[in-house]
Structures are given as C-alpha cells and as structure tokens.
Image (cartoon, rainbow, N blue to C red; front, side):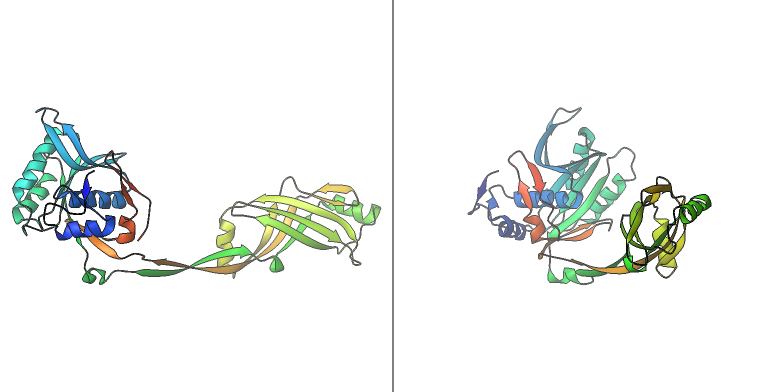
Length: 330
C-alpha cells in the first residue's frame, strides 16, 4: 500500500488518528478510515479480514470494489466504510442502496456499514428493512468514531476477583488400609507382626486421581513395611469437602492396592480415609491497559466497545491486503 507523510488531501480527524498510530498517511483519501475499520473488525471478531478486494458480480459481470471482507467458518461479511467527517454530513440512504445492490450480486451473507458520522433517518430505515425483507441481504450499521474522555464514564477499567480453590492438607489427612480378617489373623498370630503401627504417607493427586504410598513403622520407629494404592476421583469429592467444613471422611473400594510386612504381601480391599482440604485464595486483577482511541458501536446496541492504542498497534497490514493481529488486549 502506498503511504506518505505529506498527503495531497487535507487530513481529517480520522486521518490524524491513523497517523498517530502508524506514523504515515495513506496516499488515497478516505483510506485511513477503511484501514481502521478493517483493523477494528479484526480485533472484534478475530477472523480473517482482507482489505480492498475486487469481486465480479455473479449476474451483471461488473467488477465491485470491497473496502474490507470478513471471512468466518459460517459465512462472510462485506464491509463498507465511509468517513464524511470533513464534509460534516451523515450517511444517506443512496449510500446504503449502492451496497444493498452489490450484495445481490456478490457471495456475502451479510453487509456491515461503518460510518465516522451518523446515518440519516431514511438510511436507518433502509438497514432495518433489510433484515425483514426476504429478498434482501441483511445490512448492519456501525459507528466507528474517535474516542473522547466521556466514553469512559460508566465503564469498568479494573476488575479484582478472588479465585478460591482447594488443595489437600497433608497435616489433616489420614489413610488407613483395610485387609481381610484372615490376612490380619495370619499376620498377628503366625508372623507376630505388631498392631498399632504408625505410617508416614506421601501422595500425589489432581482433579481426577490420587496416588498414595505409606511407610509403616513400629513403636520404636523401626521400618516394618509399606502400602500403596491408586484411586480415580471425580469432582464430587471437592464439592463434598466444601460443604463439610473442608473435610470429608469415608471408605473407598480400591483395586490394584497392596500392603506388605517383611516381604509378606497382601491385597488391600478398602481404604478408610479422612481428607482435610485447605482453602487457597488467588487474587486476579483484570485491568485495562493502553489509552482508548476509537469507539465502535453497533446501531442495534449489541456492540459498544472502546479500542485502545495498544490493540491497534498490534495490527499489521500485509501487502496482500490481509490484516493480522498479535492478540494485544486492552
């Protein structure tokens, strides 16, 4: 795209906004607004946007120039941009008639019209009728104008949220493996394994499972044996904990779990558990960065956003007409 620092035309307010962001003027009058519209559409919808396409009509075979095109998985939008700030006039119905006629010939499922000024009453009626007339392609109206200090009134610039999560507290958590009565009898009577053993437990867990290993010692802290189990979990365990003073207890049926003493290994059938959770508060601050430069408002009121200089400086205009955006947030 051709650019200059000394345009032949008198720069409008929109041209000055463009120059302040990108450091040059387009050589063609009105092009600044078209490019800013394309940039804002890219930021808003994060889909493929192409500037200044040429398409031939399906029936009349005429060549149509499209200011910008938005391509989504579900369809495409034809975008027209008009900056009448220098003339200080509104967009009139004939401007919309022209776009409505082009939409009949071109393969777009909707048209977006952006104006740096307002629309006349007849123009608004034309756009409204396009969504009601089954023979028309819908035409939506947008306002894209330089932002003023008053635009910040009533808008949130900073949100502070405390995210509460829970993790298992090892100090208040106990796992007691259960073996069959016959295995218990054999170990105590035949192998003289003492009762009342102490255990040191380590475990690893996430939202879906827990893996636990315990090391058993007698009253003199001599190592006697160990146990190990793995248990799939579901989210209900965390919900139950929050409803019961951050503590839950019960009995799990477990598979592939074992306990062994002095080389004697036995299957674990159940685990008696008491799990203590501790609450963790994580502060999250969402704060606007950058200065508002443009305000975009849809005529139907569904979109009313401020676009910052930081966002716009994340825009790149490629030589092939495509607009890229690095994802900079306000």
